Amino acid sequence: MGYGLLTDYMAEIFAELRRRNFQTHVNGLVEMGNMTGRNQDAIKKTTAGLLKLLYPHRTPDTIGREELIPLLDMAIEMRRRVTDQLAKILPAEFTAVEYKFELRAH
Image (cartoon, rainbow, N blue to C red; front, top):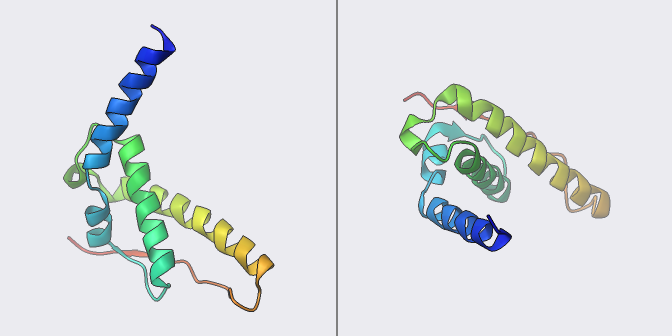
């Protein structure tokens, strides 16, 4: 199979995944505490993207809470790295952030 066909195939897969919304599911299950809205959005969007990539064969309703926790941890670590770098660049503007989350009951 040539690279052109593979690229077309992957583009179709990603286009289909773009139509699926995992973010509302993440929003409904996760409470982020008193983080800024920007940090919450970044973490929730990253988690939703990871869900799409790792579980493309599933629907948001079939994702278990035990599958969500490691992805939230990874998204928080990614966001923490961004804010840590921002704090090094502009320490007066960016302060330490307490990253924590709780899963809501169904």
